[in-house]
Every structure is written in structure tokens, then in C-alpha cells.
Image (cartoon, rainbow, N blue to C red; front, top):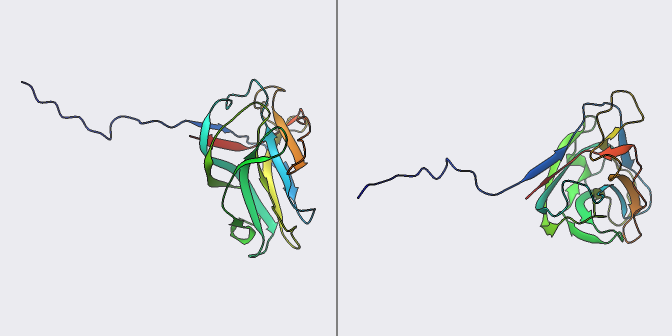
Length: 180
């Protein structure tokens, strides 16, 4: 009988990470003192590589030019009708970098991404009185842009929670990561 020792740290276990990023500078989309429950997101089309992925962690590159410890941002997934499917715990806006987009990662309830779903961030409710939070994006209509995430199938979509997200912008993609 032979003895075989297996190092359990040598083998990868589960987990998928899909990220979309760009080196383009100066392009962002933000929420400030607009109405409550505004969502800035990447709306996924049928050909998006994230469709069918079961995710528990999402990331976006955020920064807060103005902030307050009593105002919060939330990362999440919304469905094609604008209803929240999974949302993170509150992230105080004053914990975000004030000038440089930095990756913010948050845990959410497990959700399987479907065509028409949106990964984004919201100011929740009540509306902010002082904060402004911006998210990094790629704009193929501007200089220095990278390729679009998945052609024109997906793209940036801005809406209010509970209202149907409009069609994607066509030339703009939010920077994001999805992990399972």
C-alpha cells in the first residue's frame, strides 16, 4: 500500500472573477444631491460574459469629492424592472477616497446574473444633502478609451430604483468586478 500526501493548498477551489476595467482617465458618472434611490449601473445584455454567474461579491471604482459620515452608498444588483435583487451593507461616503477612484468591494446575497440585470451603486434613501460619489467608467466616444465590455450588448444605465432601467448608453461602460 502506498502513501500519498496531498497538499490541500495546491489546488484551486471554486470561484470565478470577471472584471471590466480601463486605463482611460477623467470619465465618470456620479450621484450627488439628486432624489433618493438613484442607481448608476452597468446593464448586462444577453451576450455579457457574466450571465449565469452566481455572485456574492461585487466591486466598482468609486470616489467621493464631497462626503458625510451620515450619508451612505450601497452596491448591488437590480433586475430588468429596476427592483433590487441583492444589496450590500451601508458604506459611509466619508470612507471613500476624495479624488482617486478606488476599488470598493462589497458582499451581497447570492444572486445569479440574468440578461437585463444591472450591477451598480445607489444613494438609497433619504436623499443626500452634501455627498457626491462618482464611479469610474469607459467612454468609447472619448480619447483614451478601451474596447467596450461586450460590444453594444451591455452599457451604462442610470435610473431610479423601482423604475425600468433605460437601454444602455451604447458607448459607456461602468468599471466593475463580479466574484462568485
